[in-house]
Image 1 (cartoon, rainbow, N blue to C red):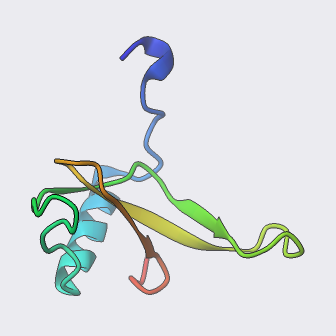
Image 2: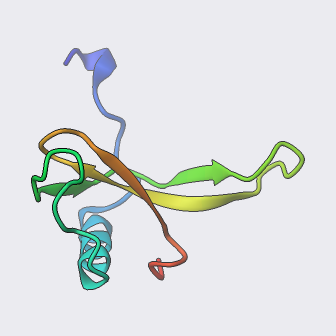
Image 3: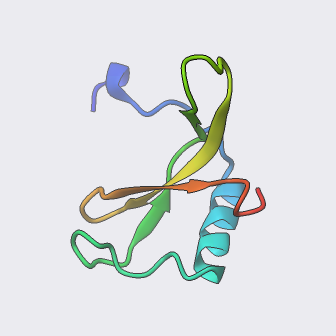
Amino acid sequence: MTESQQMPEPSLSPEQRQLILDRLEERGALGACPACHSNHWIVGHGHSLLTMGVEEAGAGLPLVSRICAHCGYLSLHATTILGL
């Protein structure tokens, strides 16, 4: 990766990312990847916002991502459901 392609600074601390993995594991959401069947997950670097419509500017559902470290499969999880 070149300097211009480096990942941005994470907005989630290592402790927050571990908490997310712990919550997902507690709820049975860290099984094998549905794409490659690996079981090595990482948490994305920050929160995402799924927008809920053009008329509702600023409204959305806060999410965190879980990424398969083997194949890159991505799943999104609502932070409110996880109690974050």
